Length: 151
Image (cartoon, rainbow, N blue to C red; front, side, top):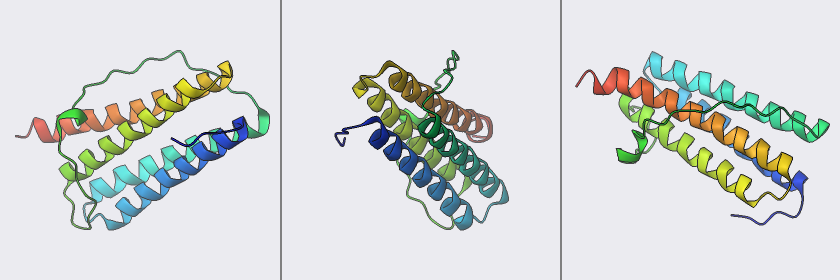
């Protein structure tokens, strides 16, 4: 991971990563032929955009509120093979791809939190890691409800 020299650099990096997630979900939504899949990806693009806005606000104001919430992990994503995005991806593959993406985002924010010396910055990244963990759980629950129960 890149070495950062300031809190501003770290926040700029996180903002870029959130924009990359927005772009990722918008591309998947545009490529999807399945209405349900398209809807899910558009919802998550909106969620990632809210994360970006939140980070921009933190950067401008210099403070944030930490959530005391915890998130379950079904660990479904750990047992699934990687999937490549494609225009005719089925719902199962779309869910797998989303779970893997959210898991990677969780790991990124956890790593940033581990490297942060500033306690408020560490808390910010732990909070964002928790948000990404919520997204992963949401995709895992969807996968469990619509894929595992149907098979």
